[in-house]
Structure formats: structure tokens, C-alpha cells
Image (cartoon, rainbow, N blue to C red; front, side, top):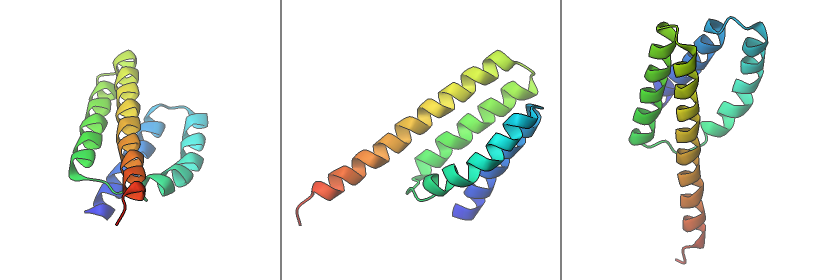
Length: 102
């Protein structure tokens, strides 16, 4: 499942950059994806996190397919906010684990 999720995630971001028809964004995305995803994929993804990410990806794709850039941008902002929430929860959980006394 991990490889399937990773493949979906990378393909989504790559496709979105190409769909934007902005060569600079495509280059930026290609260079950033390797660095960013190395960090992201070290995280322990719970199924609820994966479902949330896939939900947001579908929402973004629907807005792009409808050629509604304002709604697509709002969906991207919501996705980034959700990613911040998820990553923040994971970092907080690591801190709590570190503080636990055995």
C-alpha cells in the first residue's frame, strides 16, 4: 500500500504541475518533489491521513477539470492546511513519545 500511495501522490503532483502549463512550475515541482517527498515519506501515515490526502487531491482535480482556477486555488490552500495539520500532529506525537518515561 505504501508504494501505491507514494506513486499516486507523486503522479498527482507531477500531473498538476504539467496541467498548469507553466514551465517554471514544472521545473520547480520536479526539483522540489524529491527533497520534500523524502521528508514526507519518512512520516508514519495512518489510513485516515491517506484518505484525507486522496480526498483533497480529488477535490483539486475536479476544480482543475472544471477549469475553475479560483476554486482550484482554494482547494490547494485547504490541502496544504490539512497537510500542515497532519504533519503537526505527527511531530507532536513524536515529542510526546520522547517525553514518556519507560
